[in-house]
Image 1: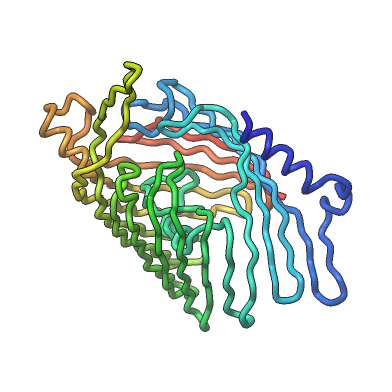
Image 2: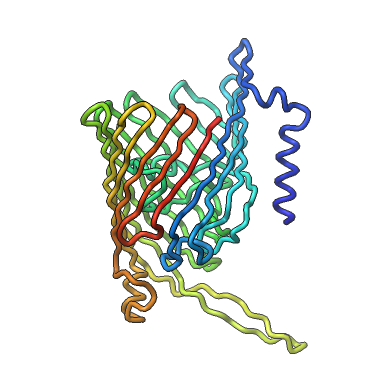
Length: 358
């Protein structure tokens, strides 16, 4: 409760006394700009299957409502951004509550027109393109990179059709707050009119016994192909080697007889995970699109559980495959209504969502 209250006060402080100006875009004669942007979304996962370990609770419908509001601007070559998200913690080990959190808070500097560096709470470099080849609305195959991190330094640049970026995050954390250790990642990509390709990677130092997460190496690939004007084909994939520690407990008896339980992480074991998808998006008109994907995932922990427990932990084997088919309706450029059906070994039967961007 204290964290939510503190963030609510921070949000009020940002906009207090200047609501009229904060709701508009400001541009000075010297090029300095201030803009407010955001998103409101309502929807969720229909026919959710708790067995797949993606949701916080065993419920048929998992709410995925979301809102964000941010301020961004620049003063000559210095740019900045503050963004707050209000989202439901509906993932595994989440609380299920709607929580307000600062998602981004950074200051950047344009070294040249095409090169910049930023510092603060921001997304790691590869986070911008880790799902580049996924053209569906709801995320399918999860790459598992570090995402937004505090204490991050990031560089991004462009040379003609080549874009590249790299970032370093000190003492990173998972979405649940578990220690990950320092994280370095980056990407390089070619962006053409017909074919675009992005290759990225990540190296994690590990928590050094503070959590179950040890060292990690991640490689990712994203491809988009536009063979004709209205059709886009996407390819996405990742290969990850990650050290994970089993959880064990240690008990210590104090002089007063009380017993203190401590969680111990040791004996880290490397696990190999991989996933890939093929997706497509066809534009029927300015308002209507159809999408589809075929997905494959293989996590070594599934094979380990199958060998130990005879497949009683889950109904699929060492890997799983599933497909999606969806329809997007865009009554305007800033509004989208989306419905996607899922078939096969999927964690849900369907996903429905409405979003308004401003």
